Length: 305
Length: 206
Picture (cartoon, each protein chain N blue to C red):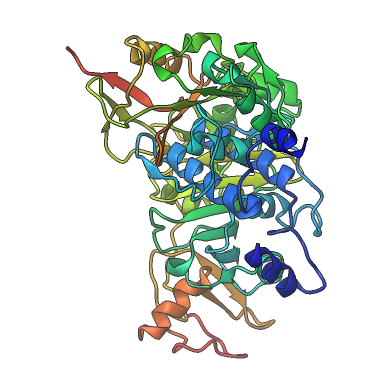
């Protein structure tokens, strides 16, 4: 009772229900999450609500996070690996305001990590949950626009079309040219879209210690991968799945085998490659690692050589 | 007069509905994400009318509402207190048809009806199946099985008591029709263990 009164006072002018959504909506989403976990990789339809942000800004992920979030959770939000871009900052602020939860930028301190299109470099732990924001949950949608047909294809595990698509990549480009939203098969049954993460992150999904939840707000779908579940990227025997490789380390922290962002520095071709995962980069710099930029992003200089 | 009214009033629901149902849901979610691993479910002072256990009632009040028909076994359906309690706090329709139940509450797990009589979902919509909440005494048992699959790093033993003799064979048959199937929650007085349909069940040779 008192706790509720306190919450209302703290929320000030807002006085939202805890984590914004009403209780009936949360129950409906929670039931969808439970079914999603029970049928790994299957997209559970749910009655997605309008959120105080436009579709495409993570309304699916936000609804999933709002439904699982508790008072003791510590929330981290990343957008393309970064904690400090608009989408990440505003979603973090949204939950600070509506749920008064603690937030962090440190991967290992978070209990729930909501992400747009990256998986942190640091391996996630058993007690963590990662929530993906998903724009198009249906991996077959661009191959077959009719929902009735894609639903039947999932029902019958008829995924030949996806392999034809990958084969056409090879026929046209000489290799599988899909670099993000690379289709995976979950526990040997459902083909699933891992959301537009770079395929670099696909191997991290395989047998991950943490629970993975996916929310697509506009498309009204929730799906999940339980911990320790086989997630296999589709490929061919003679064209095995490969992740992106970078021929240089991070210019700021010197990290190798991480996903790098290209940063254009000037209009004369100057550029550098830095960690996409900002927390990972900061942590490495704090531990004394430096890259060729000397640990400081250099301004207006020809770098990255 | 007022005494009569009080006697007829259902027991109170979850003391802090928002946070109690969140905590209960998270426990159930962890239970289904980690099949067969009992999760502690603390219901505090919350009391449900017998034969409904506090833990099963907390799960029902957290997940059930007017959208979800609930099937009750004969011991629960026979108690007007239980029916009134569920109807008052959740508004759920109570159904006698297992095929249309979103949730099933079973107080007498030993006399559990055939699992195949519950809603198995369809190949197109496997999520429309029944979630069975079965009250058991213990999460161990002589008729233990070995579980593997999603949520399990290595195969792990599991058992619950009491259960019908044919239960594990029946469940294994149901799981063979994946993605159709039923999802089980076994609840004791203090714990809950999940058994989603994705789990592969190996019965020990006897």
